[in-house]
Length: 210
Image (cartoon, rainbow, N blue to C red; front, side, top):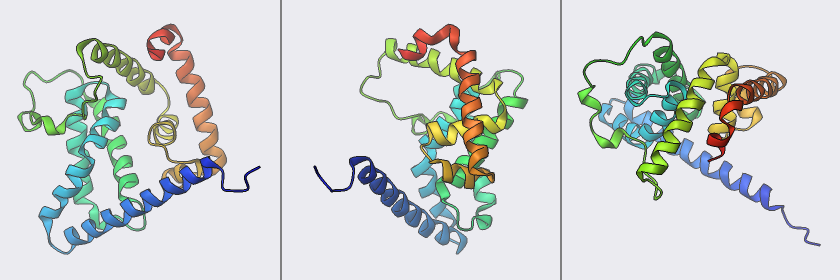
């Protein structure tokens, strides 16, 4: 029997090390921006634009609305950058993106008659995978719309916990810290949120498994 470290522990340690390295890298860029090198913020935008778009899209379920929310998220992050303390920039930005998307989802009454020209650049779209073809895209788009609609119907606390834990991959302790609640509360929100989503998506189980 091997007495070495379990593979899961090795993977977790590797993820923690990678996240720590990314946090330090982001912090250096943040310090440059706060020191007056405003253009350095573009590095953070380029680094996280796909991530922010994806977070927003999971909440609003519509590309133009997600792009609008992503723009608002980056503007809010830039304006409030000096308030970032010991938090991970990625985690902090994720919370801002979720808040921006929730606001857009709540207040957006209809699709705009004109597109947002500043978002026509393909760099603002999620990266395409090797399976990117019309049939796969259609199935994925339908699944994403259903999931976004279901997420929009559960409570905001449950939605935030599920996005951070199930989608973004933060553990229970990190999710608790980021949302400012106890570990037990986070676990309860995730459990209740999953049950609510299961009921909301029960009629579409085949599509969700596709």
